[in-house]
Length: 273
Image 1 (spheres, one colour):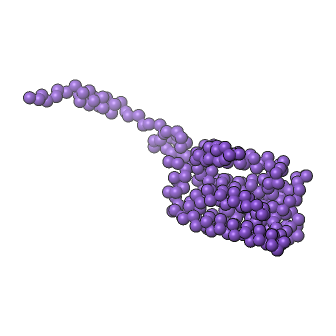
Image 2 (tube, rainbow, N blue to C red):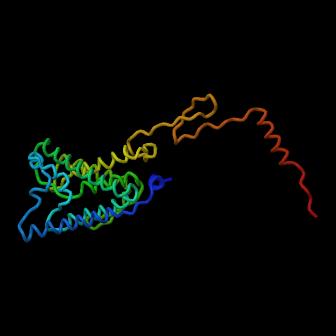
Image 3 (cartoon, rainbow, N blue to C red):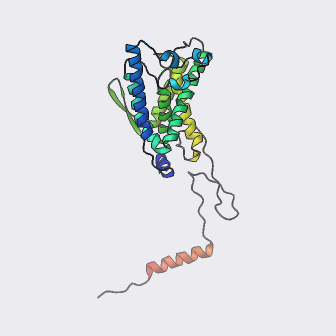
């Protein structure tokens, strides 16, 4: 039985309504942000975007508000985040429910923001550029989805070329890409925020669900061993991948079974007219 099937058997189906409302809210926030910037000349990111300087001045609300903003006025940033939230957030919400989904999404965003700020403050030559976007929360949903469905085939586009890759390899690539971008920042992307969201998703799958015995074999976490008695008084142990030893019949039972098989094979059969 697949790991995802065990998830669906344990929890009831939850219609992904929260994901839909969240996508609508993000698009509405982007439209309002663009209108204020274009017509009113008011940039809301000055007070609502996440930055080291903002947290130093006590603007802790930026850990939540930066997840609602996106780069303006081009819509590609918000559209790609909404697409990722649609394809990965909906399956996760159907498993965990809307309340837990929203909590995990926001927690992934907050953890990603904190990691991005920490990296900017600690590592040298990291510019304190204000961070906006829902990518950290989306990366948390990607990590949960790929951990639950490691063998699922995903199709992505790289420079107009479709590439099909399994979910576990996609997650490995995304995590490695985020680690490199966190250490060596490039393209103005908050890779530390992506990495923080991924770590929250992996931590939830590992500890929050408490099903470490059912994790796929590629996850580098040790599986717990199960102990069982093969016969009364035996201390034999086996893992879930090893079959327990078969009980051997005694000498009298063995001879009796062989005699019965021989008699059944060679006894005369009734003739037909």
